[in-house]
Image 1 (tube, rainbow, N blue to C red):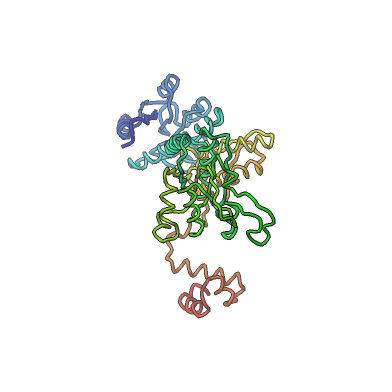
Image 2: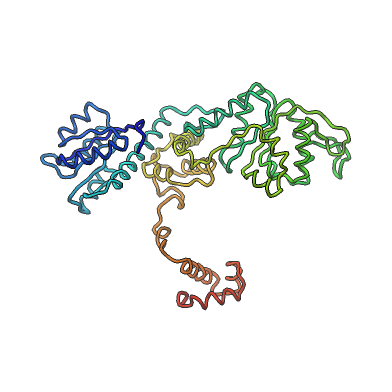
Length: 450
């Protein structure tokens, strides 16, 4: 059962009392607050005095039809959604209902599940529009650059706030693009050491043979080309914070040196026999599972425990559904301001696409998408055709999901052979198999390839 705390207000309009009773009982049992009306005139009186989130109306009713009620709502109530139900389904009626402004069109008889699913879809559209409107009317207050109002992000902010006041080592985990460096900056700049240096280091972007010199510095003559002594990142961060991004990419020898820094607060410059003390708080981040790496002996267990004093897990964007529209509006304003123009509005269909997308690239992917849309779209409203193909419905992509694996494989081999003009050597190389295997496969589904 849906939580009663939700309590969206739904008005059901139908000239059949039995239908009203069934729908009201079903929706009330699922946590909605339900009003009923036996006709359009009564419905309008309720709408004039009571805020309603969703109107579910019958199409054919005496005197005034449901279509007239839909038009009334669309032209007078901007914050109310509409669903239409009918016992006389026609293609023309469905088209007219959608054109008039109904989000959903259900035909009687419908099941409880069909009703509840349609109600949820319609209210999701309304919520998305409200989220975007609220974000436009009142820009979010970033938490040291991080934006989010979902519960899962509020929990993250709470942990960041506690970590900021201590010098404890923090391990930040999360998928690529979730904002791990922003979290590290939030820890540093919201704490008492905000005026001290913050030094980010991408451990995965520095070759292993250079990483030690980059982190700890080197003395003159330490190696070929070391014409002068140079401080490393740890010396630069002395008194402040060093952020070791993708720490899981460091090799075992470097991990041993990092462990020594954590244990003793000392570093050895390359080529120097004397240690140097440093007062540095270490924040580390990874997009890999360090538990698994430790188990596979790819990451030192003692270093893991030293780093893992305070743990902050940044959730992927797909788990922050309530923040997608907030972030989209923020990025739209940001990039539109940079171009000196008004931020374009996202259509309801675009909002639905954003909600349903999986976001493998997380917040970074959303930011890049919105930037591209703002730059490339001249219209005031962004519509679905302007979205990347992966976010749009494709009949070609959706078709054939009932095919067997052998049928899919046969089609792929046929396409690869066509792309190589029938050259089996090149086709086998593209497919990652040898020519003998390709010949056998061709024999197996020769009927599909001719």
